[in-house]
Image 1 (cartoon, rainbow, N blue to C red):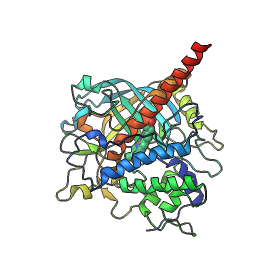
Image 2: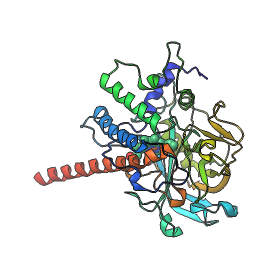
Image 3: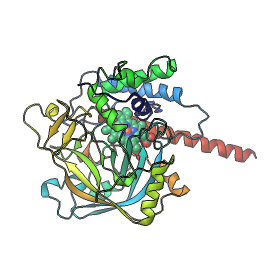
Image 4: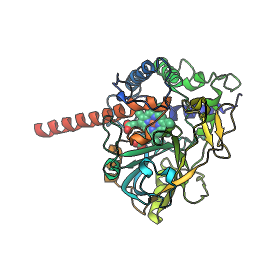
Length: 416
Ligand code: HEM
C-alpha cells in the first residue's frame, strides 16, 4: 500500500525522527533486570539488539556533537516550549474497574505535578522548518511526584527512579517505528549516513526504500506515520491531543494506552509567519491570560481469546487502537477498532508565568522516563523494552556532563 510522501517533508522530518540518536549510552544492561509482564513477548535475540542500539547511540553521540557543546541536552526532545506546574485530579466518579494504580483513589488531587512540552527533534531548531514548510512531532511529558508514598504502592525498581509516575506522550497515536528490529535498522542507517556525510541518501529515505518517483517501496506503515507526523500543524502546545502510542500495564491482568486531550475544542490557527519559538510564545500568552485544562483518558480493551498479543498489536508501536475513527488512513493489520477512551482524570494548569530563567533551568534538570512508573503501569512491548536503558543512561549522561562543567568552573574560580 504505497503512500506518496513529499520528499522534502520526509527529509525535513529526518531530523525530528532521529529519535534517541546521539544518546550518550554506556549501557550493556538489558531493561535493568525488571521482570517482564505476561503481555511481553520478546523475540529471541532482542536483548542483543537492544545492547547494539544502546552502544550505537554512543557512537552517534560522538559523530553528532562536538565536545565544545556548552551543555549536554536531552538527545531527543531537547527543545522545551516550557515546563508548567499542574494538578492531576482523579475523577470522583471513576468506575470501580478503572480504580487501578494511580487511579485507585477517586477524587484525589496529585499536587506539584510538572509537565514539560517539547519538540521531538534531536537538535534545538525552529518550531516550524519554514524552508520546507514542515512541522514536527511534539511531546508532552508529565511527572507526578510522591506516588509511592501517597498510594503506598510499589514503583519499578530502576536506576534514577524517585518514586514518581511519569506519562510520556507524542501528538500522534502511533510511533514511527514498530519494534527493536526496525529501530536497529534505522540506527545503523543513521550511523552510515553520518559517517559517509551526504554520499548516501538519507537514512529515512533508505529505510523506506524511496523510489525515484518519491514513493516508499518498503516499511509502508512507517512511511504513512512519518508523513502524517511531519505534517501536523500546531498553534499552541496546550491545544492538541497527546498519546502514549505504546501500551502499559493496567493492573496485573489488563493493558492500557493513555492520552491527554484539551478539555475544550480549539481552533488551531497556526500563525502565517511563525517565529522560531512561536510555540513557547503561544503557550506563554495562553497561561498569562488564564488556566489550561486537559482530560486524561485511558483505553483499556478486554483481553481477547487466542493470540491477544497479535490481536492488540502489543509488540508493534505502529499499531493503532481506534475508538471510531483513525487519525491515519486505515492500514490492514495495523489497527483494532472499537477500543473506546474513558476519561479517568483531569489535569489543571493554573495561570502562571513559566517563562523565567530559573524555571527553564529546573525544567532542564527534570528526568522523565516511561519506566518511572508504578509496577501496576509497567511499560509493555518491544519499543518500551528498548526505552528502559536508554532514558536513564541519557539522563545520567547529561547530568555527568553538568557535574564535570561545575567542577571545571570551581577549579578556575579557585585558581583565580
Ligand atoms: C512510544 C514511543 C515514544 C514516545 C511516546 C516518546 C516520548 C518522549 C517524550 C515526550 C520525551 C521528552 C521527555 C522530557 O520532556 O523530558 C522523550 C525523551 C526521550 N526519548 Fe522518547 N519516546 C518514544 C520512543 C523512544 C525511543 C524508541 C527511544 C530510543 C530508544 C527514545 C529515546 C528518548 C530519549 C533518549 C529521550 C531524552 C531522555 C532524557 O535525556 O531525559 N524515545 N521521549
